Length: 225
Image 1 (cartoon, rainbow, N blue to C red):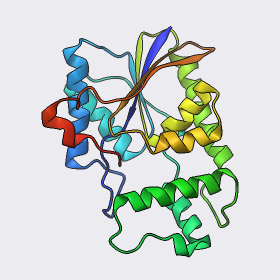
Image 2: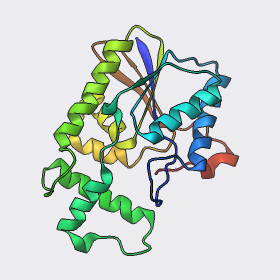
Image 3: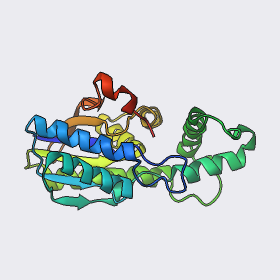
Image 4: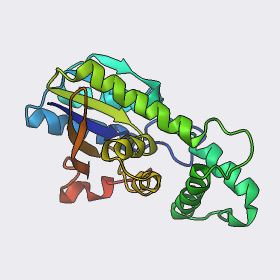
């Protein structure tokens, strides 16, 4: 079976006017991960990525750390859902749940978790970019694409976002939809989820690892947004 290394993008620019770009730390996380792979002589046959800027920048940083240029396969099915639109729709219906001015990041995550549950149950009103089912279907289509195109390879690097990764794993594990909500909020920036696949099945071996950050001088570089 082929192996996949499913990576969440590095730290993005949360709290700025453009979330969809890596912070300085996010770029460093990606390079460190590439260096980790290089130190272990881990080569990859291809890089499959969503088409968001933070995905492309993370892939480029990993390749820089690896010292190689990988063939890049862009699949929009690996893109994140529009979490800001989901949260906005939820807070429009429940304005009393809005985090106060200057609230910590944890307050936003709490609102996001609740908003995702309402979205999953089709309880949000308004003009949303996509339904939960559409999100699920496009991530599944990306998984099928990877299985069909790369099952005869050795190692494939995949770069995506927390929500899309959680949905990818939900399908792989045949888990409940609630699993997506829970996993989404656990996945660390530049973390690696490892597994195996062929054109029929996907098997997960490990989840949410940050071996390139697991050292005393990098503990503060472990981030979640």
